[in-house]
Image 1 (cartoon, rainbow, N blue to C red):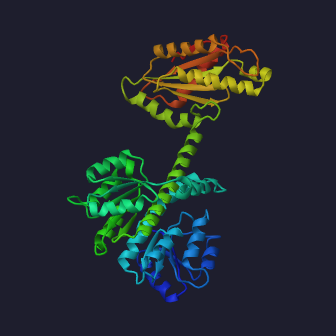
Image 2: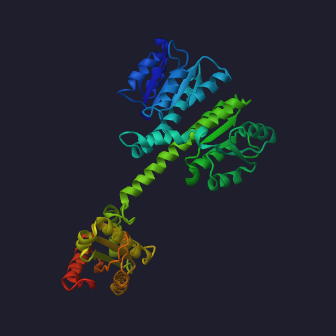
Image 3: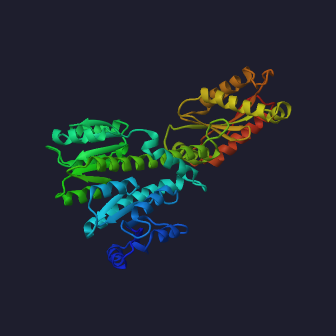
Length: 458
C-alpha cells in the first residue's frame, strides 16, 4: 500500500525512529518539527495521513489537530496522535479536537503499521468521493463538513450488538446521553437489522456469548447495505491480537474495557461525523452524476445518457433473437416560430409540457431523451415496426389534439410533431446507422407536410 505519511515531532530522534519503521513498509515519509511548519506545508502540499506528537512547544498537537480539522483542505486527512500520556482525559481531548486515533509511546511496530494501514484505506475511499464531489471553491466539502457535525444535525443512530447484560447495560447508559441506541442481543438478527435500518454506527461486543464477533464484523463489511457503516469493537486490553485482526477486517475503531463514558461518546461522535461527511459527499456525487445525464429543462435524459446506453441496446438486438428495438426521432414542428411569436419562456413551457406528455405515455423500459433544441429521441426495447408505428402515432395524436398552455393569461397554442421511426436491422446494425435511418424518416415526414409519422423503409 503506497501512501504519503507526514510525521510531526519536535524531537529528531523520534522522527527518525518512526520514519525508519514506515519506510520499511514502503510508505513515502515527510517530516515536520512544529505546528507552524505543518500549516506551511499544507499551503502547497498534501499527504494521506498525519502522525502527530501531542507534546510540542508552542502549538501542541491538540491545537494543531483542531486547526487541521477546521480547514477544508485538510479536514479529510486522518490524524493519529502520539503521546506519552495514557490518561483517558487526554484521549478524549484529542478525539474532541478531531483526531482519528491514538498511539501511546513507546509505539509498537505491529500496532503502528496496522493503524496506519487501516486509516490509509479509509482515506483512499474518502479521496475518491472527495475528488468527484468537490468543485474549485470546495463548496461541497464545506457543506459536508457542516452537516457532518452531530451537534448541528442531531443525535446519532446506533445499533449495539451485545448479548451480555453486564456489558450492554453500561454501554446503553453512557450512549443515551447523546444518541439514539437500539440493542440487539441476537448477533445474526443484528446483521439483518443493520442492513435494514438507518443506522450510523454499529457497536459490537468482542466477547459475544456463543458467537464469533469478528465474523459478525466481517459479514457487516461484506454486505452491500452495510459496507460503509462504521463499526466500533469493544474488547479487553489483553486481546491485542484480536484487535489488530479486527482492524484488518475493516473495523473502524475499538474501545478497551473498562469503558470510560466520555471516551465512548467521543469515539462515537468521531465515527458518526465521518459517516455523515462521506454520506454527504457520496450524495453530492450522485446528484452531480444525475445532473450530468439529465436535461435540466425537461427532466428527461440528455444526449450523453443516450450515447452511453444505446450501444448496448443495439448490441442486444443484434445478438439475441427476438430482442427487437425501435427508435423514434421526434421534432416539434415550426418551433422557431413559437419562440419568435411568444418568447423563449413560452418556448420553454412548450418543451416541458411536450416532455411530460411523452413520459406519461411510455413504458417503464422505454428511454426518452432530449437531444437538443426541439429534437427528442425515444428508444423502445422489444418493439417491432408495427408496434413502434402504433406508439408513434399515439404520441403524435396526443401532441396535436390538445393545445399547449403558455401562461401569462395567453391562449394555449397548437403544437404538432413530426416523427421518424427506425427498427434495428441485425446482425450488424449500429446506433449511428439506426439514428441516420430515423433521421431520414423524420426528414420525409417534414417534407410531406409535418404532423405525421414515417417509418424507415430499410
